[in-house]
Image (cartoon, rainbow, N blue to C red; front, side):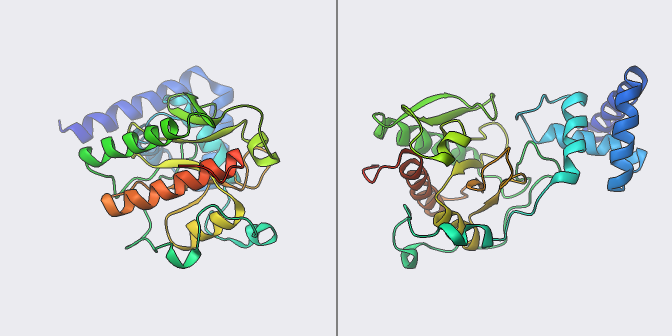
Length: 255
């Protein structure tokens, strides 16, 4: 039996076990999946796709998968930028004329959220290490303004936080968390950015809004940045990371 067949068989067994042990959860999940147009044969594949996304806010098991499926109907699109038009004046990215466009198509994201992850354009192992090093170096370079701790949004990943009290409402809503790298599968990032910078990043193809962005649960300023694929893209992501630190700490002295 091939590896893919084994994974599909195990996924199907987990789904059957969930149905057998938790009838009330089964009724709710079945209603949601029917609404979404998922047939039973698709459930096992859908469950395995959820597990392949890696660690996130929800456990990587049938219970986390069930919650992720239930959240799907509440997903919002993440590419429109009208939401930022009323709060554009301040920017930490600098001159928009010097901010480049990302080459090629956007990264494809997984069906589920959470976790919000990309499923293609995954960087090389060498680039993955450089992404982590650049993120942690930004924290070290700005140690007077930020601190590193486990992400509150996704406890599996290290995150940067504002050191001290949040300087504005967006920082408070996100519990001082500036951002984190998904350092297990895709190496994309979640970062908080100023409204004008959100608009620029999305329109230039570097990322998109969180599926719940703009609700009482998730700030509209929380973006997923696609993982950089080469040194040139890494430099742009570093620029965005510094802009995120500047916005969240309300500082123009980020290095």
